[in-house]
Length: 81
Image (tube, rainbow, N blue to C red):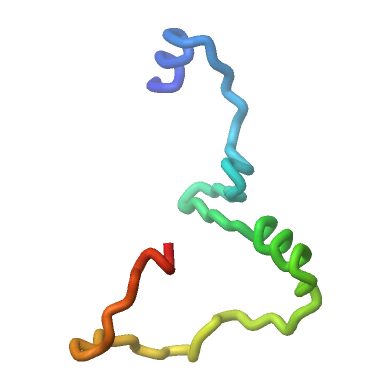
């Protein structure tokens, strides 16, 4: 209903399900939407000659519980944006 009314108001087309948007791959099913940047990651690995590096599924210890250290050093969070 909403799609039909907005298409009548504006000059637009229904292209169906989204597969790729702003560099993000999108896979949709009836009960979930999965987004991935697999293509982007692959391009970065190629750019820096790491296409054949040893891959791991997670970059940290499985099941590791992180906790805040109230006495820790402050960092400049702009370095991680």
